[in-house]
Amino acid sequence: MPDLKSKRLIVLKGWLFLLAGLLAGGLLLFENLSWRNGVLLAICVWCFCRFYYFAFYVIEHYVDPDFKYVGLWDFVKYRLRKK
Image 1 (spheres, rainbow, N blue to C red):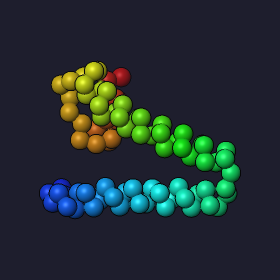
Image 2: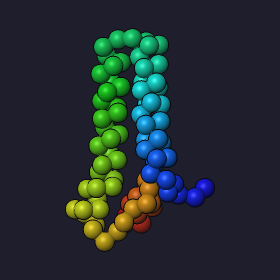
Image 3: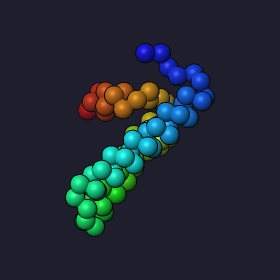
Image 4: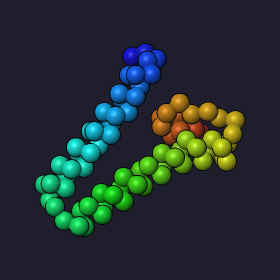
């Protein structure tokens, strides 16, 4: 599949990801509503966001500025190659 070039479609894709995430999280909480599940879901989302930031910003700007990542798969291959 070719890369998206349309700015409108890129923005739409971002909003659809937000909508899908809100629906999935809402359905998880609706199924078993409790403060504990809400907090655990929030921590889970926050941690994955921080990992994404780490994988693309921290590694590229502080650990190895010469390597540019295209996606998480490239990050995994890079880490495996470094060991």
